[in-house]
Each structure stands twice: as structure tokens, then as C-alpha cells.
Image (cartoon, rainbow, N blue to C red; front, side, top):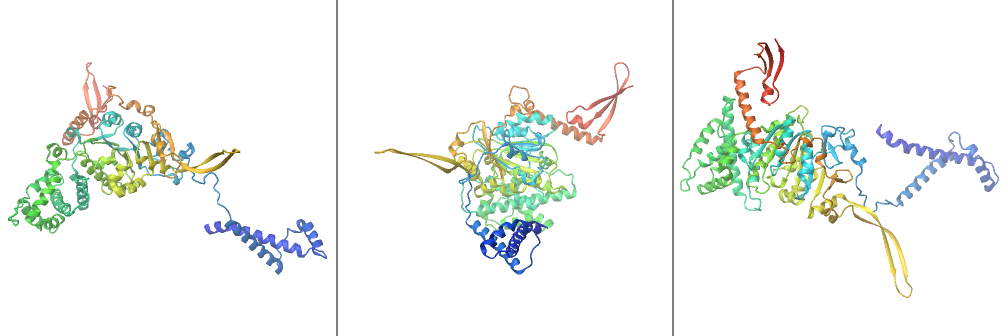
Length: 629
């Protein structure tokens, strides 16, 4: 059918051309006349009357029909070869600013389902475009220098949409008190990981998210990537490889031991399955340089472990480590100890002692997860990098295990100060594969150079996997990159020339030239109320930044420390822990989820109330009066 549609038009044209040539030939040799001029006059006069008729099958007429077709085709071919490719008005480029009609196919029916990019531009979430050609991933590269309003004009308006679960890097810890109450009142689970004030943070134990041997290797990659000196270039990789060997042995030992305990008692509480436990293994691995054969407590533990597990990952890696000489083994231990130095601090050990975050739940329930890191001191930001890496894997696996291979709630990650939150290994691969799982990443930077400095050759791959660029303002080499992204337009030029001499002459010439739609210096002096939005396959837009005061949910936001809407997370966390303890007590009492209370009032009548335990734990109205007796 497709082939028929392809060749049918040209076949019809050839048949028509053959018919014309055939009929002209037939009319000519059937026209009377003693000489050529008379016959020509009679042919012209009678052509209109005799042209239409059946196809002549005389050899001469068929031959002329074929020749006529070939002649026309040759003329068309010659014309085509000599045709000039005039692209009038776009000789040097066709760039232009986008219009309202350009963005309309990308906008959802419901305003709430918008991922806001500017005052007038957005993409859709929780909806699909009518035409698949308008589908785009929701990965966004947002660039804005200091003071460009990345949080106020971009992050907060999108949080106010409340159309998904959110994971947010709160680089100053200011977004939590400003938006927390809004999310609480709209039924969101609130999680907070705070590396600035660790005592106000929920506990995070990355060991709890190691579910396989492959997870062990990934975890060590993240740990090493985030605890290595970023200024160090090249050098001998021997020490790093041997550290990896020892860490793999110890963490695999902890994992395999934990699995043994859980097989016997799935409800068992396992102590020291955390960084403190890892450090305990290191501290008990003393090596005597003069007598390397002398066994330490860890050697004995691994011998017992081998009896149960044979040549497991833990045992095989530890045997390789023990091949090192006494002096080398001691150096490896010192290197690992130095790498894990932050965990010598009590507040860091306490922060990672056990896990309260339950990261895999983020895709199953409406959740806002604030990851608070310092934008002035990156000492503990490696914990955020470690967490983000595990989050990508956990959420991807969660989605893959669902029947539709998507999360129950889409998850948007707003990675503010992306260059300062630690390194996420293979991020260029992760960002390329998360779209189909209902996950998106918004990479927020001050400049593109930050990304290139952090991720080197992978930076361009990360940029290419973001279908949308939002530029809020900045300076430096980023301006040139944005200018190149916008493309070139064709402009008209008017040249005036005046020649002075004995006789003055004046000439005026019109010509065309190409120029950037917006040059780097023009972008650098752009109005701070404006932003540039570039969506893959669409003309770029010069638009107003989002005015969050006009958003319908602005009244739920704390935009002033004295407006009484600031969210007290410490009290919230304390109350949540108390409710959790009460919930455990209720479970032990084995009470029903809902029951009735019969109470006598002042008049001696009995009032019957319904009491909902689940609502009570969520601080909602839990007692309902049913009737009087």
C-alpha cells in the first residue's frame, strides 16, 4: 500500500504525457493538406475538435507518445540540475524568537500539570501530548549566576505546582521553612537530610540500601569518587585500587553476615551495619610490619566466615588484600582510614547510624525530600552525592518492578548547586535512562564551566540529555554558549558610500548578512526580569521570569520570616517520632484501626463517638460524633 501511494502520482503523470503525445501524433497524420503550411493550419484549427479520443495503437502514434514522455522528463531533469537553491530571507540563518503558537502543543490541559519554565512557557507532566512529535523529556538545564533568582523564579514556582514527588537540594536550608507547611497541609510526606545541622536531620544509613553484591561495588565507586581529592590529577592508581580491594572485602563481609542473621530471624535488629561497623573492622586489622603472618581479630573472623561462605566476594577480596607485605598492608589501612576520617566525628557517626529516610518510598507516596547542604563548605557534601547515586538506582529499580515500569508518583529532582553536591558516578547514563520511569532531573548551575569542571568529557552528554535549557542570567563563557544555541538570523544591510573629489558621488547598496539572534554581550546585559527558554526542536523564547506572587498557591508559602507560615521542621520531626512510637505501641496492643467510644455527657445521656487511629497519628480530625442515646 505504501509503495502504491509512493508511485501512483508519477505513474498518472506519465500516462497523461503519453496520452498527449499519442493524440497529437494521431491528429497530425489524420489532418489533410497538400503542403506543410496548409497541413499545419488545418492541424491547429482541428486540434481542439479532434484531440480527445481513444488512444491510437498505430506504431507511429505509440512511438511519438513514448518520445514525448521521454522528452518532457529530460527537460525536467535538466531544469532541476540548473535550478538555483534560493532561500530568500534565510540565506545566512533562519533563527527567530518563538511565538505563542510554537509552545501551545506542549502545554497540558490543566495548569497544575505544568512544569513551569517561564511565565508563558511550560512542559506537561501527568499528561501526554495528542501528537507524539511534541513529547519531550522533562530533564532541564537551568543556568543562572548569583542573584539571577534560580530559587525564587524557577524552583519555588515549580514546587508550588505540587504535581509530583520532589527531591530538592536546598543549598541554604531556606526552602524548607518557606515551603514545608504548604506540603504538610497538602498531605505530602516530608523527609529532610541536613548536613549543616546534623542534629536536625533524619538519619541516613547508606548500608541499608545495599541489596546485592552489585550494589556493594556501586557503593564503593560512589564512596571513592566523593572522598577523593578533586584537585588531584593522574598519579599512581595502585593505592586507590588496593583501598577498593579492602573496602569491598569489609563491606561484603558485613553484607554477607547480615544476610545470615536475617535468614535465621527476619525481624532481627542488626547493630553496627553502618560506617561505625566498617571503621571497627579497620581498627581491628592491625598489621605487624616485622611479623606480617601474625593474625589479628579480623583475620580470624574471615577464617570463620570462609567456613560458611567458601570463596565468596568478601573472602576472595580479603585474600587478595592479605597478599600485600606487612608494610604495604599497613599503608593501605592508613589510606582507607584517612578516606573515612569524616566518620570519626560523632555527629557524622550519629547521622549515619541507622536509617529513617526509606528512600524507595518516594516513588510510591507523595513526598518532598529536602537535602540540605552547605553552599560555602563542601566538607560533608559527599554524603549528598552518595545519597543521590543510591536514589537514582533505587527509584529506577522500583519503577522496573512495577507492571507499567513507571513509578506510582512521578519524581522531579531539583539539583540546585549541582556542581557542589558531590559526584554521581555515571550520571550521564542515569539522566539518559530515567525518563521512561517517570523520573526527571533539573540540573541547576551558575555556569556551564562548573559542569565541565566536575564531569569533564561527560558534561556534553549531560547537556544533550536535557531537552530544555532555561537561562536566567549570568556572564562569562556561558553567554557565548547560549548565543550559539539560539542560532543565526538573516538581516538586511544598507551600505551608503560617498566619494568626494572634483565631482562628489553617492551610492547606496542593499545586501544581506547573518548575525546571532542575540549576541553574547546582548545576553549579558539582558533585563534581569527576562529569561531565555530553549526546548529541543522548537524556536527559542525570550520571556518573563515567573512571578511566584501570582501563583494560586502563593498564599501557602512563607515568603516572609514574620508572616507566621514558616515551617518548624524540628517540631514536626519530633512529633513524627512520637507518633511512630505510639503507632508501634498500638500495633502491640492489636487494636482495630477504628472503634467506638461511649461517653456519658453532663445530662446523663450517652454519646457515641467514632475514633480513627490512623487519622489521629496524622494529626487530622480523628473523633466523629455519631449519635446521642
